[in-house]
Amino acid sequence: MSIVTKTGDGGTTGRFGGGRISKSNPRIEAIGSVDELNSSIGLMSARTDLGDDVLVDLKLIQGIFFTIGSMLSLSPEAKEETKEYVPNIQSEELEHLERRITELEAILTPQRKFILPGGAPSAAMSFWIRSLARKAERRVVEASEQEAVDESILKYLNRVSDYFYILARYLNMESGVGETEWQGGEK
Image (cartoon, rainbow, N blue to C red; front, side, top):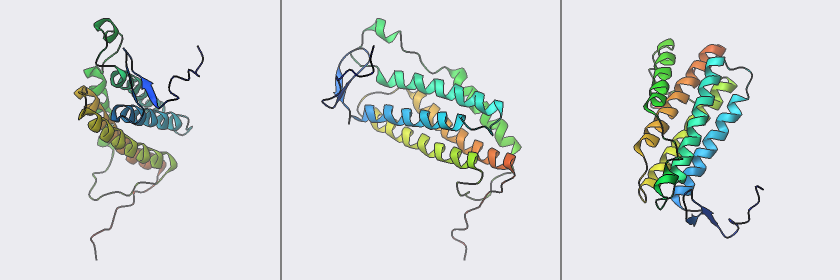
């Protein structure tokens, strides 16, 4: 099957299980934001300065983003047998992410002030991915105002942004790069 279908030339896209909606629909915006987030993680995983444990985390997260995309793509008109093809986020997947956040956070010095995004290239990339996670979360919330969204999606996106924040701090520490604290409000 060719990638060129021409069915979207008129500004609509098909939904899994039937029906078409505008490519500007908040649901499609949410799917696109998750896809952008997933691609940014793919870019980060191409780095050669990441440990195997981080690379494993990145691949797991990417797989779950495909699950989220499937969940968001499902049409409300889909038949029950079609719905069975769509995976769900498992509680173990969320728990794994929370456990990894706790493990990384335990290694770091306690944070006392806001930290400016940046530092080592891998950390700067992780800070950027955190902001894309927040953007995807906002888009999914917006989509949920028109059509119900499984709450596990929002929980997972929220934890992913936490993970990439802690990962950025960890990568700066591992690289020997100090964090730059925001000095705002001080005279």
